[in-house]
Image (tube, rainbow, N blue to C red; front, side):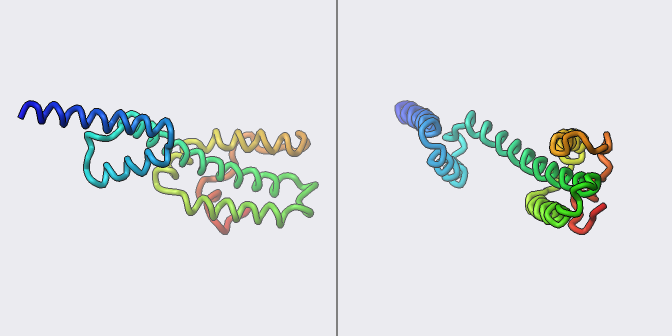
Length: 160
């Protein structure tokens, strides 16, 4: 019986080691194998180190994706509202972009991601503001602080 335990322990270490090697060579295969282990409730065989890293990265990717989309909405709202010299020629394009980015946001947003956007709104606005200042060659006076609420930014119908 002791021999069986030792063999089982060696086999489990081999599975985890092998899974770590797979991660370095082929992350798609590693993901497939990890999903199989999870479905079979073989938790001891998981490559926890890389699984934790992947889950953290996934959370960051989701946050970055919604922040980027919200920044695009803000950019286009600022341009359409304040860049009067270009409004006549670009307003339809800018409104189309606003609509598209809002649709993408609606498809991705969750309660947690909405809370993240609320907490990061000032930083996202600063990034958008930096872009529109460059785009307009600093010829437009944009608000220093975000003139829009998150509800307005996410609303499909709202335009200033």
